[in-house]
Length: 221
Image (cartoon, rainbow, N blue to C red; front, top):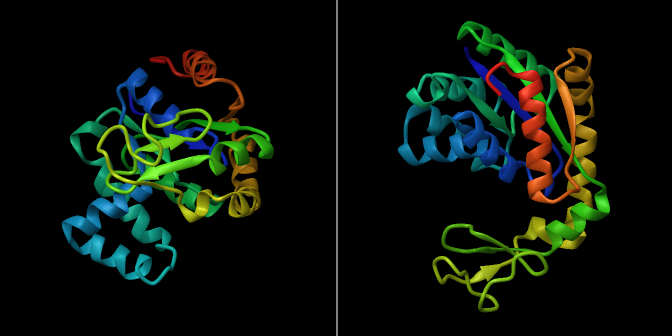
């Protein structure tokens, strides 16, 4: 049975962490459209070149190109039982396109997990994040301090704060996310596919809640 799960949630709510948990729990690949873009651009294939022609100009990759990249990704062996989607869809039109794609593969969206948290908590999480320049390992000045200030524990590279993790931009990112995804939340709510998860709790508590949802919704959960 094919299982496709969509993860939604504002910046800093922990989608990446919980995606890894679900991936391990269900033995499904975690698929980020950003990762797909980067992988295809690195490979230099036609779809990658097409995506890069937009990204390099600061433009959004058109839906038809993204769907074509997803179709190619879904045909890879690790997706034989489905996938976890993070970063797509972002609009009802993209959700429609995704459903058409999944139907053509004999599947559908089985569950949409909407991880939520108050804006003030998200600001605290994001504004304290520092990433390493080499591989992007993430540390936090309150929750996950490096052993040596300014140095990545894993590869020894310099830690820096991304522009979009600075306090003055975080609130704007959250507001943009709310405005852009509100129609998508309604879309999946109307189709009785959306389950809201409280992301303000500890990582372990959120994972436990998600595991409970998976058991209720998915035969194999």
